[in-house]
Image 1: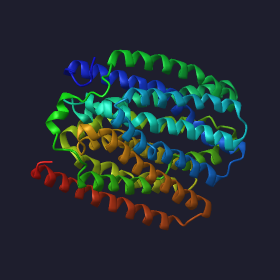
Image 2 (image 1 turned 180 degrees about the vertical axis):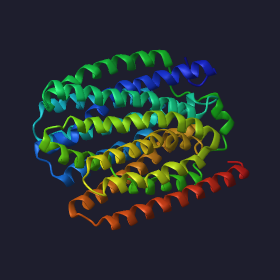
Image 3 (image 1 turned 135 degrees about the vertical axis):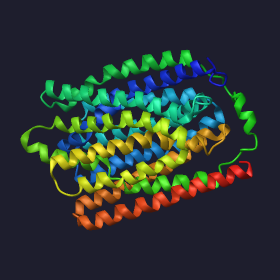
Image 4 (image 1 turned 30 degrees about the vertical axis):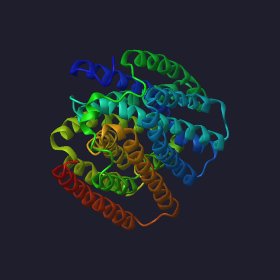
Length: 403
């Protein structure tokens, strides 16, 4: 099956296979993320270190995509990057053999680097497969399957934490089993989907004039940057929950809250994907506006109910970030530059996560007044919405010019 020559039925099959591969990966690394924060706290890491390095990992996971995206476009060896990236998920089970928080952070960062290596190549292949199907549907279906794994993973970890009486090391070590399943299914997906080295899809020939990324792409990317900087990191929500639950020895609830985030993410991604194919970039106004709500609830006080509400709204925004934010990129970039476009976009997205982690880490550490936090969030998201409308306007202008 060659992704440059697929009919609609085969395209859906290929999209499903890539989605199930992501599902398998999420069983491991998304399953672990709900307990990484309390594990680091257990090992002695400070609040700032947990929040900052959590966002730094996201930064690496996105910033390095510029390099991997360019290399993927240059070599056309998309599947090599996909295999290498998924292979680094092996660092998660290795968390089970360390009791030093600095080494644990290095392993977590390695997993994020693996995501940086595989994502542009996978998204480029997915965007090519989506032609004739709809980018919103393709990324929505992919994200739905991805999030099924992101829900099952934390649930498995909740069960392991209960069964092992909160034994972090044993829980991480047991995640080696789903990792081996991932490797096996990835090999199967590669054999079924297929690829052509240095081959460009026939559709690309119709876009010969589109040899650069237009201004609309960069304006849109800047809008996403501001949106991300203003969104509270889930690590801070998790950390606040950990502080509340630790005295009652109910830390198993922390990954359950993370499961809620993923549970909101999954259906949101699918519905948002269908909405994007109809309304295009205009539908992104909704997640930009909703991005203010998690911060308002999480920073209001230390009540667990407020944190759960914040987590639910964070999941709604995350579902749209992981589907239609990515789908929108395909509308700005020619096929020959898809890997590069996704690399640039995700690099900026990662910078936003790093900046957001630093800002919110300091907010938590210094106990910044709630009113100041509210003003900060409102300004960043308002500016993001303005830029989003500007990107939409520039898209229409460039289309009229023949881009």
